Image (spheres, chains in turn blue, red):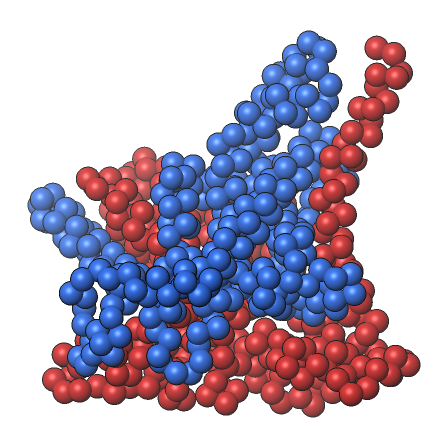
Length: 277
Length: 293
């Protein structure tokens, strides 16, 4: 390898240069989105494009809060957090059943995982008609049920791996101490799988937070999510650029925040999930 | 222990898995059965004829040029984006494999595109690629030495590059993270021994590293392949399937048939076709990649 012949210092400098270049390329679009949300209309429609605004004025955000558009971020928050909560509980106890009792054998496990490949567009139309029938269109409960169900294969798949790592002796001694099966779940399994729960919950939350197709079809005005709200500004007219950018940033900041706080669990979550498969 | 104590235990395993299975059946199996039944009728916006129409809708599928074109569009995007994401992700994983001060900061920044909503990603690229006020044409202009006015989301020759840029930008970091984790787990002593024995980088990659990371890489390819097959959000945000129906993918077409044309029975038939195709592809891929245990 030619790289080994170079001096270690040169090599490190070269790697930094490459790393910096790649990072700039990948981060630049995010920077551009954020910067547009702070621009005045004159700056947005300036030619040549302005790479940084004169001041970080918040008028674009102010409009979203004044018109109530920003409430869609609240809807996304409710839908994503409640569905994550239910998916984590239902998925973890189901995974526990698969791991410890081999419920349904390998077939049930494979069937559950295979549900992940179900293309949303193929099931959303029948679901829409069913939701019209039971009155769940444009309701929190409708989307929460759907997001919970859609996250379950992933949660069960991930939590299976984490639960396998819990020493059986811990559960056995809890049972000997007089704990019921349910108490073993709450007092041993959930605390022991904590890291896995957090890592999995981050991904489940981000999935529901970013989801678009179900929200597009199954919401109207009451529970519109921020992703659907962003597309409302695609009028073909470029006048809504400021709103597109500001709304996107409002919807993206919570995800950045969640991921930053959960970083430690996240990297482990990605590697464990993939490696364990 | 008395029988009364053991009994609740016996059903416990079913109690705790029942809610998950019930939800999956409600959301997965109900639409499937419904689609199957409705696809043999002739329900559309005007007509609610629920009598048995035989294979009418399925015969229509074969005559529907727009359907097969949308399938072709989907496959083109997948065939170009997936290998590029894999190769770029692998190269980046190699770059960051060795420890270097500040590596964590780079990795944290590189995660950003992947955790953004695909709708926001599409919106962002719409802003970036704008012919007049976007920075991409401006940067190209610096190299060209004159004003560049490429209509990225409108011109027939440029829409595919536009979609694929956005797709690669968003999902290469995903490949990168998974492959970085996989590469970190490869036993270093083996690759070092091979290097001492004079094996080239490629030979040691081919015979030591690749077999070691393959199980993880195969899952990453499968996940991304499935996601690309149902690509919807990015297209919706960037082109809405346009110009005309040039970038209409299978998901966008199905959506249009169901929610714009209200072809209830025909949409059900398309949905069934998609699920059948996916089942065949996934089963084949799992066998082929040696993922079946």
